[in-house]
Structures are given as structure tokens and as C-alpha cells.
Amino acid sequence: MNNEAHLTVEAGIRSRRTIKKFKTEPISLEMIKELLDIAIWAPNHKLREPWRFIAFLDEGKQLLVDGLRKEKEKGKFPRPMKPERVEHLLSIPAFVVVVMQVDPRPMIFEEDFAAVSACIQNFQLAAWERGIGMLWSTDQAMYSPTFHTQIGVKPGEKIVGIMQMGYPDLIPQARPRTSIEEKLTVMTSASPLEEN
Image (cartoon, rainbow, N blue to C red):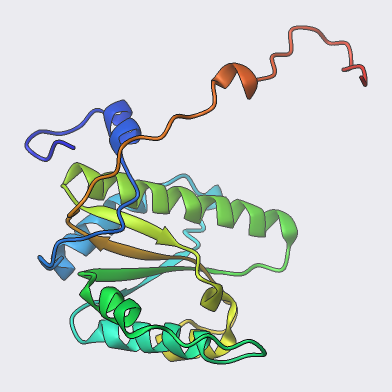
């Protein structure tokens, strides 16, 4: 990671890692706003801008972590969150919950979900360029109406990700990707594909 000079797009994409261990150094609200201002340049159909963001900083992190803890402790098979897990979550410098308005029309929903996902990737890449790492969490609590109410998600909104963010304490090694030769189909004829 290089935060001395701007990364090329390719270098940023290839070098970015999911970060699970963060330094305690805080992330300012001004930095989060700067990163989100870049992130929202993601492609989005008809400029619907289907995203909204909720930042949890300082004491506000307690509200989010309490909501996550309560979700683990309810239901048919409750599993209390261990104190060390609570402590770990509270030590994370910042959280940004990314939500989208749910449109009942399937095509619009898919377009908006793709746009919000692209926005999240922009958020991660812009942060990485500045030496900030993230973990894009999709915790089961994201689907709970009570969790939504506790953290300020409005009716008709869907959580797309709970972004943990901070300066990396540990950057994992790159893991290999499957060769594009195994993932790419090339069509050079107008004839339909034959079934094998």
C-alpha cells in the first residue's frame, strides 16, 4: 500500500486487502465524508443515487455493537457474544453502514443493488489509497427489523454492508485468483451455443 503518492487504478485494485486488525488511531468524520464524496461517483442508472450512509464514531459505536450483540442473543438458538468480541468491535475506529432504498420492481432493485455495491468498492479503493483499510461485513443482523430500528435504518431500506474501517495493523498476503481463462467465454459466431 502506498499512501505517499496516488496509486494507479490497477495498483489500487490489485493491492487492496480486506483488513481485520486495525490500529487504534481514529478515523475523522471529515475523512469519511471525503471518501464517500469520491465513492458516490459510482455508475447508477438514471442517477437515482440509491445509497445512504450511517457513520458510527466514538461513543456512537456502542449503539451499533449493542445492536449486533442483541441480535446474537435472541432467536431459537441464541449465542451470546463473547466479551472479547464486543471489545474487539468497540476497538475498531469507525463503522459506516451502507443502505439502499428497496424498489419493489425487480429490475430497478437489481440496478440499484449493483450501483450501491460499486459505490462500496469505490469507498474501499479511495480509502486504501489513503492508507485506510476496510472489512465489508454482511452480518446476519442486517436482515433484522429490530436491528434496523436500533441503528436508524428507515422502513423500506436494506443494509448492503456494515463497513469496518481503520488504519491497518496487519495487511494479509494476496490470495491467488482463478485464471480468467477459466472464467471467460468468448463468442465469435452468431450460431447458438450447443448443449453438451
